[in-house]
Image 1 (cartoon, rainbow, N blue to C red):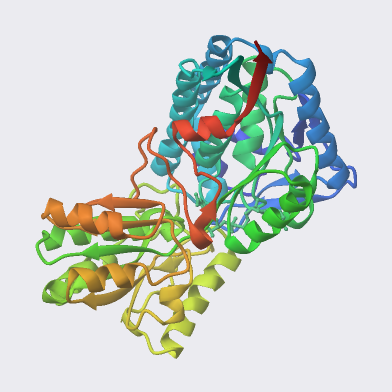
Image 2 (cartoon, rainbow, N blue to C red):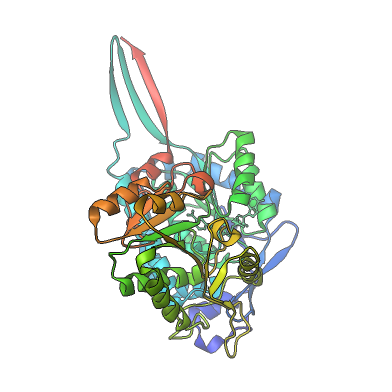
Length: 497
Ligand code: NAD
């Protein structure tokens, strides 16, 4: 390393970053790329290199899938009693909690996350492991079926090696959401982290080995999406695939899985609406939505990026939001007092700026201009929050920007608000804001998406399914008992009497 201001880092983080090229982790061993290729991962807040990482190739990924299959067949993992597997997963959660400060700092550096938010992500990963570890102990795996002249039952079995491809916005949290149900059900996993944020996944693989998770149960294959990701998606020996990322890449992954008839779960992007009625506390609602759009610099798939506001309160709401957004402190993610850190890469910053320009060119009005932000002492990927307003046909109202940009539009009545909410190709998450609970429930259920929230945005209690429809995903979602069942195949057994 030696490129980051090392004095502010935890000793264990310094040790990890200065330990040379980070390698993949397959069958309990560190692995290099067979081609010797590496890629660099950078600190988005300073632009400096954090580490080189092995860029695994197709043959390396195929070996990882073999290792996961072998571990499934030969290791006791799948055959362990659910309570014993659960104990191991709780041990992994304990280790994550013990190393929380270290993992969170690595995540904050790699993803550009504010450290306290990264700590929340790490805790959430541990909580998800515990949730599925506990749930798996209470599943009824065998159900008798009453049929004439036959004894019959169904039993549920783990599938085998499961593949996971993750994005860069919540790397560690999403690993928890993804692999916890698969592992709790007795499957083995191969993880392909995003090339912008590979470090926390690699750290996790080592922790898993330390706590005694058998070799080959958790494998990590860092590399480029078009190589390592594509190889994982195309491997016919994967029994289930899970992809979290953009709809564009999701289509490619689904096509590869389709060729092999491998079931696939897609968790994709969104263009969520917040519908704000005229009976709300304007100040409080503005504060919450400003908090949501600036959280992790707006790089949140389920964010409220279209703010549909009742015409009666439109002006006062907008003025409250503008005041708050103007005072958001943009800064380096590890500096205390920073409210909004950088976006993940120069490419992502360009994407945000391009959408602002395109939105304006198509007739949207800048309510708050946004654009490049400068942070003294750092040459990172900083942008200011922005607000646009106008027709929902505008490109900035239709497409996912993935930055701190919200698009405003007024409405006059409930039906119109529902119609505007559903005027999108996406279908991930929306929210309705009102003190009239009857209306809140009506509108929440009329919104066409996987998730509706009432008087809040971004709410994920373990046990409530979270997933998308249309361009936002398919395959059942995450975080609930149904997810655990997704990782158990059903087998019917029949004996004529
Ligand atoms: P992305 O689609 O560019 O990349 C996601 C992953 O796919 C990365 O690991 C990447 O290396 C890999 N990849 C790239 N090309 C590939 C290929 N040809 N074959 C296989 N894998 C390939 O997405 P991103 O930019 O990392 O993440 C942002 C997107 O993720 C946004 O659209 C966001 O909304 C979405 N997202 C969705 C959820 C959800 O739960 N629905 C959660 C987080 C992020």
